[in-house]
Length: 335
Image 1 (spheres, rainbow, N blue to C red):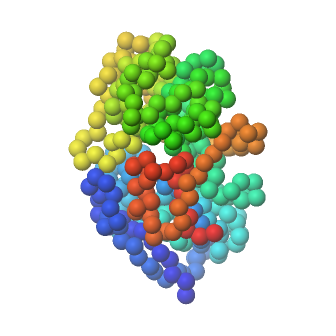
Image 2 (cartoon, one colour):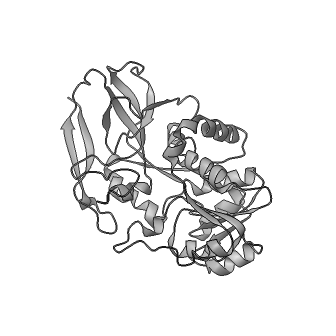
Image 3 (tube, rainbow, N blue to C red):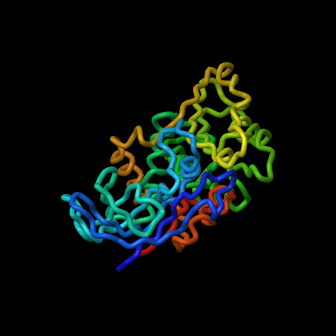
């Protein structure tokens, strides 16, 4: 009988996630019961939000992963057995399938995807949660206007690289903040950003003065911390700040660093608003159609960093926090 391999949360990580924070187990597969499908997981999306799901705090948009529970993750897979109407063997699906080789589902939060239209990893990136986050976060919350200056941090990551390109499509001037010369070159030379700031080797505040002399009209924040504070000091009158994430804070052993320069929101009559992708799921098709159209037209480029091997999960996951990933980080389980 085929066995299922799973990463289960063994303890709450303290700081950087370690392999010892998980139990890597194998258990026999069973046949699905009435109203279930059995899915072979092919690709797992590795996202910064997963780090927050490991914490004990319940003051979040989702409950924490319980100790002993399979690590939560979005994934795509193939139905290998079904006793659920609407899903047939061979269907490809996406949902919260977890960090494991096989998953059972009752169909809730499970959607079909078509590998004939796009490679499966793309459904975890531009045509998935990162794409929806970038699309609605920028256009609905940030509301950039033609000719305005948009700054995005974590600009070479799964969400940031899409935000910058969408802003360019809408006629904005785009400045990306990323770590390392290679990533900054990629943003400008390959993705069409107007400028890029290497936060690892440049003074971010000074670079913002140079690249956004009239101020920042829209700031899409993926990192928080010192970079958020630096951008707040460069806001233009009526600026919009979109809070998407704070990856610089996720491994903190102490309290999250809040924005010291928040009074600039008052001075500049600016707004700061969080974006949660789940709020936009009813409109998901709008974003997927738009993103797919831009990809087909060559206006929007994607890059997936695919790492093979379910057993590499703890180490591969850390690429998000060291900046070693290039684009959307995906774990290949099978396929």
